[in-house]
Length: 94
Image (cartoon, rainbow, N blue to C red; front, side):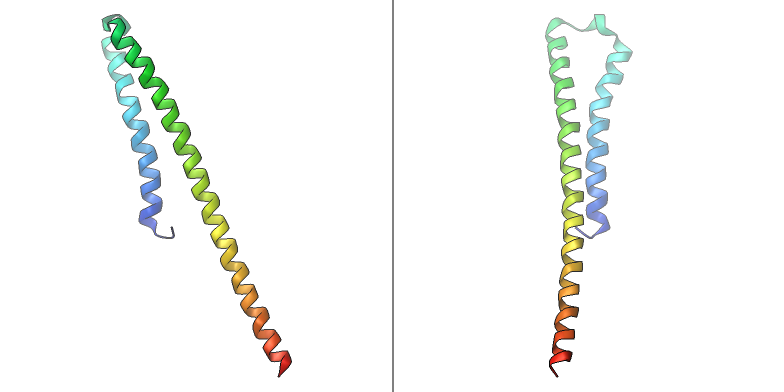
């Protein structure tokens, strides 16, 4: 997870998902609500629910990735401190 490519990919997935959900809204604004049949209106509401779910789930996923990155950094720091303490103990035993 250290690579810049992975971090860019996470952000790009989130941004492209939002754009994919915004483009139909632009079409709705251009065509107008009255030009949609009832079936299309139900599909539109389903799409809106899906868009909200998509944004929510990616927000959760990104926050979990950030927590995982932070936990990994803390673990590495702890392991480095343990290694330093082991070296001190070895020096004291000599």
